[in-house]
Image 1 (tube, rainbow, N blue to C red):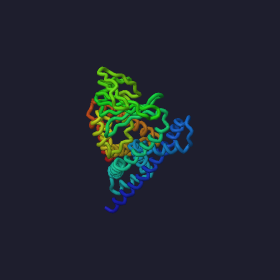
Image 2 (cartoon, rainbow, N blue to C red):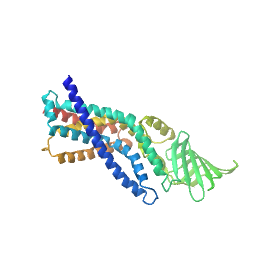
Image 3 (cartoon, helix red, strand yellow):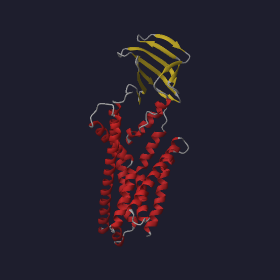
Image 4 (cartoon, rainbow, N blue to C red):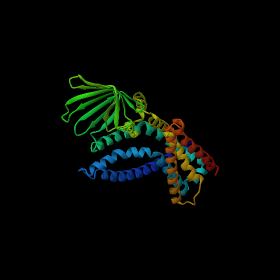
Length: 363
């Protein structure tokens, strides 16, 4: 019992070291690549090098979080190959522990890390991404145009050479904004008039307002237009529906509230449901990647050629990534239930890995 405890403790410690090393490598690579991207963004803006570096430090942790299943996979391969080359696996087998026991400890660690990342790391990375978008957004050329979904409705701000418009709608229904109010200000921020309408068809940037009423700054109705009233905007249905395009800004603990808010505003919740299911499945995804790394490291021999393992790891990671993405698309388009679309790739990888582990355990 004591011997098994010491071996398991040793495996856990060594595997943790490998995860830290691989994570640091990915973090440094992410920082370097993202700095070049930020420098390219700021090439025409007078900022110091500290701004691209600071933005990279805010963004890369989220990137690392999204890539963590593949970091775990590479860490597993690195760890198991290291143990094979130093004959530690042989020594452990002689002591009475099977290959399955060697994989069990990294598997348990991967589940614990998955739960920790979802509940603790994800809220931090979401805050960092929000800060990143806030800082970078202040340098955007079109920063005078913005839109947001709040508890008070859908809000849009637009600015051109002649006026500033603030638009509010209670919710979105199909391709229409319902209960629309457009507040118009001049360039001195003085209120000019408002336009109220029952709905606005936003299938294109040329909105068609139904039952519009134009009211001046004194609150008097200037005119009522029962037919369609045209309003040219910077936004159409595609831009409005893409307000939640960056789901990395949403914390795991806020997904439920965001789904409820989107439902109330008439938005599709497919993307948010996918994120919720991916969060639930994250620890099991890490476990399946550890098992898969054990299959390739312990169950298959490639004449001890490290480059072959590297090539296999890259190919497998790419295939799993695109399989995950393809399955998620099937869920978002309604061809598969979202739960099945998210969990199916993980279950397939898990089943394949378990079969491979059973084979490796018999060696």
